[in-house]
Image 1 (cartoon, rainbow, N blue to C red):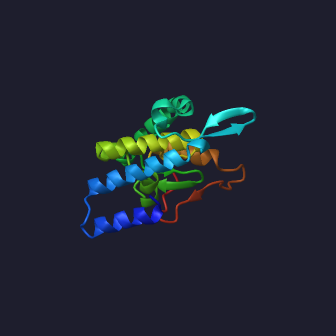
Image 2 (image 1 turned 135 degrees about the vertical axis):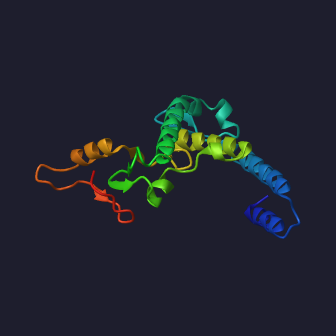
Image 3 (image 1 turned 90 degrees about the vertical axis):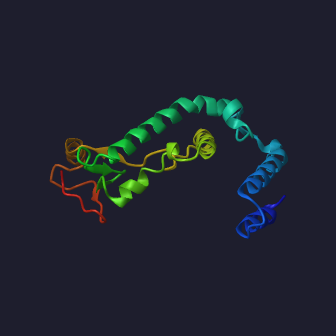
Length: 185
């Protein structure tokens, strides 16, 4: 099966000629074919050592993923804490990215918090987690599906953050969000 065949499957679902389960099964077969065709590409050499790139059941058997899983779980746990803090803007009124201060209710901060997998159906959540682990372990990706890109703070924490990013002459080394324009803590 090639990409045009996948597009045709999606079109058949849109027309009502195929169910979502039939589409899912077709896509699984397609993924299996890709895995079989690229089995010779599952390893590369890095400085004389081989590192697995991709295997079909990577989360269960891949040593790279197994080694990265504790750090992946720590990042996921931190993201969960940040999402919980976003639900309590009275106690956590600020959010910060790399260089920008936001109000925690800002749509930019909310979007950067990502979608918790717990809110998704079981099969989708487990597939996304496995995919997230593979992408993190093999390529270092941290997407907002599992990694919060914002740190949600109390007013005191935000005041310390801004103070740490203010020069001796009063110049700031951070930006204030242009959408929510938070007051300086």
